[in-house]
Length: 375
Image 1 (tube, one colour):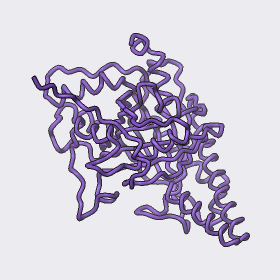
Image 2 (cartoon, rainbow, N blue to C red; image 1 turned 90 degrees about the horizontal axis):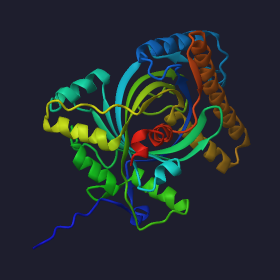
Image 3 (cartoon, rainbow, N blue to C red; image 1 turned 90 degrees about the vertical axis):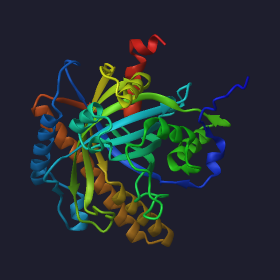
Image 4 (tube, rainbow, N blue to C red; image 1 turned 30 degrees about the vertical axis):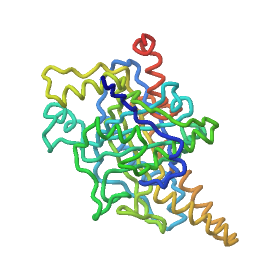
């Protein structure tokens, strides 16, 4: 009579001393506003709102007084087309809600081309054409709400693509579709085949700094958010751009997220994976509709690095110039938000500063639902 004891995957305290892989924590600066509908059941077209956003930005580029272009002797321009994406985010938390209570967003993200492809993926689960094209683990910690919808947060990633460590042309990442059960287990361990991930390390480091020190931390799926995103960039030639798109200065996103309890949504996905006919998607608990204006991280990070170098050298003139540039970008980021708010107001759409991450807001919806209270 041999009993098999199932060991649950956990993050251990030893993660803080391990070499981590992926993208280390980077500072994200963004404005986040919520679109408020008079009737919560009202259907809303993301593409219709996207056209309003495009129109506002196009006119705003001509009329607004911009600050950063004066510092770099250049002008802003916008993408001709709006990018379209679908994110399937599985959020994780502990039994005592450490992530929710400490403003941590810890998620497993699949990216799909768009909502249409995602619906086809659910219908034809094993057709490679509709598989997710990316899987990444993400952690956001040390969030600061600075008023009027503006916040900063540190984000770390572990991406299953050859451009991100530990993967490369000589150590290729696993290919899609990344079976959920297998890759969730890696997430819950905080390691991929023995390699610690930066998201896991950053979460444990942050909790320990907050005085929450445990030998083990067990993270389980709490919520699933299905997010349709429209995205547009504002470009500006600067000395601080890098990567494949060095002119990108701001990322303007329009998101519509349906909120589901993870237990029911993951059961639904498992049935689809097995090919069970008649499997029905759970009814969403609610939705979030948001506009985000983010200062592009490559530019902001390079500016921060240059500022630190100038301070270390005692180059006062350079320090003052870089501070002016950073301040100018902040002013322009706020100006973009004002332009959008004004145009939406003309169209009879109310937008207000958001308080909290998507996870924080979604958890509040969940906590106030009959499902949570029936637990």
